[in-house]
Length: 420
Image (cartoon, rainbow, N blue to C red; front, top):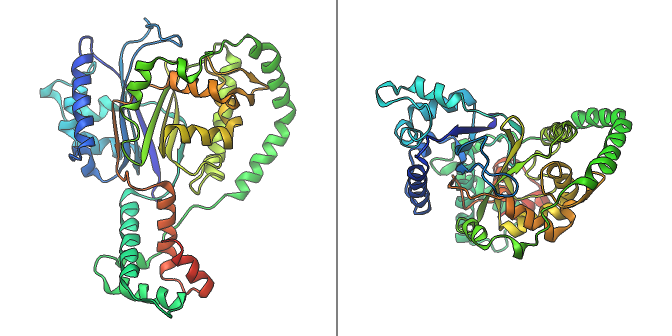
């Protein structure tokens, strides 16, 4: 099984090059929206990619003198990170040269080689604190192929006359058609889909049980000594800057999927940082052991998400690619995992008032939605390899493939047909 992995690069932009780089990003963005192919698509390994111009601002929106403008790149890709960097440095050379020539220290034209490009990009890598893939183990070609299989079967069944045919007879007819159709030989082999790792969950439960007294004391310290002093944003959605909202909405709801980018500033103190790191470890364990079938904390719409600490762990980036609207996405988070949202994000500045680390916070929906918008930043360029597919579609298509050449009874065959 080939694993999906994240790459995040945070690269300083040259003084005076902000506007030129922004203009280039705007052109790439418009080209993608208009369906013009990009050089990196030829790799056939990138599920999602985005570029963000990270402006140096504090939690109040004021300029920060300690950092300059950075270009942030993120990709969700198949395979090994080193190979991914080699591929974009070799096969996407012109694309990355055009963009990163606006960044500090990029090799001058005479010194640009696959090796020098890779070395340059590698030095700006930032490791993810936690990374979620909604359909783990499925490569980009697999996702595309399985969707083509599903569409072929759909068209075949819609065109046929199945009166007085049982579900098993229809299933057998589909198998015969696929075997007789060129290009679907791969479908005779089932694909491995991830399963919940119950042993890992049991070990996690034992560790939490052992640590429970310390966790309770820790939460009480936060509740009585830190949370009463926290400053909140205190805005409602209608009070967030209208121009900022309009800028965000320009790049939303253009298709069935959406993107979400936040930059957050950590609350001061080691307790908050240790708390966040502990929760990130917990999240990584749950993602590895439990959230393997398309749902993150019960939310069935997230394709990829990641948390990234930058600037000596003073700031946190959050990226998400999801199905549906922004309002629906955050509403699902509140309804199904508000405690998780609160536990993680309450360690960042201006978050709605929390209690005992996991209570209140995100459940104060009006203030939470305003906080989310306030700290959301515009994504300059966003690319998705399959904008027409939901995470449910991707998971379902793998089930179709795996059930296609099995010997199914009538009930199982009917379940198979209900997948279309």
